[in-house]
Amino acid sequence: MIDALNPVTPAPFSVEAFSCQKAGNARTEYEDAWAIRGSDSPTRCRVAVADGATESSFSALWAALLVESFVRGRSSGPDFFEGLDSIRRLWKRKIRGRPLPWYAAEKARRGAYAAFVGASLSAVNRGWRAVAIGDCCLLHVTGLPEQMELAHSFPLTRSEEFGSSPFLVGSLKKGDDDPRPHVRVSEGVLGPNDVLFFASDALAAWLLRRAEKGEPAWQAIGPMGIRTQEDFETVVAQAREDGTRNDDMTLLRLTRRASGERGAG
Amino acid sequence: MYSAEISRKNPGCFIFLLDQSASMEDPFGGSSDRRKADELATIINKLLHNLSIRCAKGDSIYDYFHVAVIGYGQDSVVKSAFDGAMTGKDLVPISELANNPLRIEDRVKKADDGNGGLVEQTVKFPLWFEAKHAGGTPMSSAFKMGADIVQRWVAEHPKGFPPIVINITDGESTDGDPVQEAKALCSLGSDDGAALVFNIHLSSAAGNPIELPASGDGLPDKFAKQLFDMSSNLTPFMISRAQELGMPADEGARGFVFNAQPVQVIQFLDIGTRPANLR
Image (cartoon, rainbow over all chains, first blue to last red; front, side):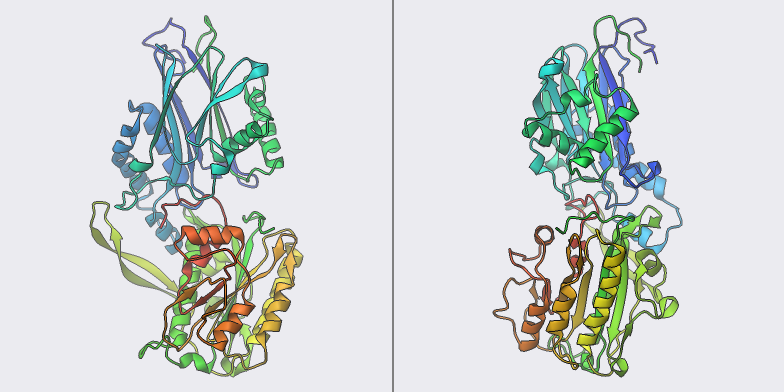
């Protein structure tokens, strides 16, 4: 896809996405979501990953609405969560009127929940600004392929911080459930050899654990490590072999494009 | 141990033992108008209600758990307590149970309106069990029947999360010492650990509820002490989950409660990410 507004200027960022559902589940049961907008634009790029909670209903829909709303919007900080009302209305509208058995109706009445991380990047200074709630993570890795190291991990920084009950953003507005105090914000600058990875919780936890053990997997998930869906599934299989919990896994990889290389959307 | 994944492919197993004996007609917790049998029916209906909702997904329900409910009392026999479409069955998948309550009542509940106020909502409340109270209390035999089901389950699911047996009673067994039978049941298990026994004690005595104690000291009577002795230690995950849910569980806590409605025990098993802010 070519950006019609700037058809000849090279796009500065390249973003690729890989995803895989929980082992034993159908692809239709995948409850993570991701969105990318502007990877073919010379001025801006927005990406987001969300992870719908297993223990809530219609959470894949909620996760998808969150990431789409983020990449289509302009907010790059906590103000994104000021605008949740319209996304929540959309979620409600999508499930309203469905004939549901009692247990499904009661579960839907409790709302859907998701972890979220979204970032906007500026082509001007290669700066990124990210906002997150829960345990989807941004991992900023720097250095040449053989010497790649973690420069920044956000919002969680250690593998032991991942649990099975994070605070998540809900699809219903409740008085005692305001997500705004839980919003985290971070910023950085993407250097020439840097990579930004966005990962849902199980994958992020495994990547941090590998780095903590002195056996980083950055090269394995870098541009030379994962080229195809099959490559990604091999990495996922390795993570599960290492004892990572069986969960949906999503990876977005954002790099600076070499000068002269054209955006492909 | 106690780390096996619970999924549709590797389901968990709950076995409830219900005391439906004549002594359950006595008042509950010093109340003048509420019987222990009423309290038991409320607890089991709430537990099954919560378990069904926990397994609901979209417009469907996932069979994360299989459930048996054994009654002991009437005619001093031990048998499946299910009525209606499930009469005579022991283990059923949660979907079958959720789709076959005896009846569904409409109840009005106050809910957060999102703007600092409350709004009344009509919610569906299914009932599977009515209050029953007749006959003796063959609790030891109930544990034997529970053990038979556990044995069958672990043979079919040798690597799965071990079964959890939840006994709800006033504690006055009439067919011998149930402690030995409970211990025998706990000697069974899967590769992932021994079967677990929890006890919910409904007493006529008034007094503050006690939840998940680590010691039998201070329990009000010999029946409470006996049921405490029969109860398994909670796993570390269960202790941390109980704490998250606001229950007073310390290291060494056992699956025992006295005159309380521990509907949270249904949350003690991990089936995936549970939002901390989901109430």
